[in-house]
Image 1 (cartoon, helix red, strand yellow):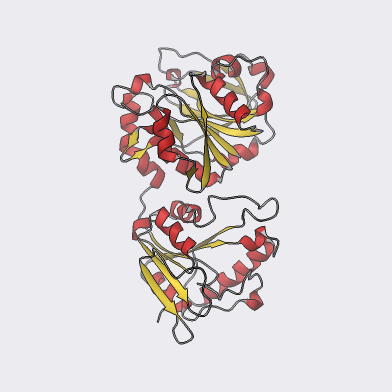
Image 2: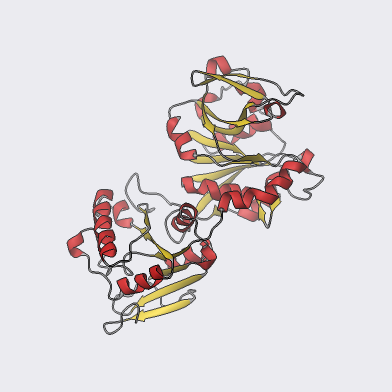
Length: 411
């Protein structure tokens, strides 16, 4: 799935407090708003981000360049502002998109995007809606029998109701060939074509904010990061699997071939007893290359977890990435979750309320270490096995543990 983000607006109402950068790049306690938004969307593991840019576009391009945490970033540049519809259509045409998740670059909503995409995978158009206390500030949306039936204009009275959250799942056949170059998606397509389009919707029930006015921007500065990151009070030991937990024999996928590294249970138990969660993060290129299946991986995972539980150092969670660019379909692609990208670490941190700065990673490959550094882990440990060396001895890890036949991981 491609993700298209509209980031080309002038932000006229916000220019009294946000100057010299486009609205999506407004600072939220040291981080551009657009970066926070893209980090959350990265958990969807998109094929790429398509940023629709116009006003002060170089500030966006110079910040993100062509990659964000391992996810390709491309730009649909507008020489003149094309309106929301023109910007979306240009992005679809320029990159030959079949469908995409489309969002405004100046609003944030905590929602189950995966569910939204899956539920509406066959729809020409799906819209995410949000219930708010003052719907007339945005314009109310009316629904019936799972479909949107009307959009109402903004009114001066305060009235609760549903609003368009500015998040769409769009299929390219939504756009007719007779549309002008410049048009509004909302006014020229969405609102007047409700009877023909019959758009589906999903109601987002969690936090929503747009930073379009100074008051809401100030609110975002006060609370957005805590909404996204929560009260990260737990610590974790993040572990690579092959070469750290078990001996690396190459494409391990059978429990009878699994031999645990000497000292690994004592090493993990020490951290567990000191209050650390144990989280495994493992690239599984063998799945992508057809060496074994995801079912094989799951069976081995169950065995390893059961052995750790017997040793009184139960594993909290495990994340794996089955993708590799040189693999077979459907696994032959890059991924936010494949180390050295930080996806598995960041997902674990989000789901288990982990304070990354107080957490530790141990891996036997430099890609493990780079993933930890990118995620912001407090301590990274490189395990160098002199009997089974993986990669270069050079490392940016904070600590090194060398092992051989006489020395265990904890020795």
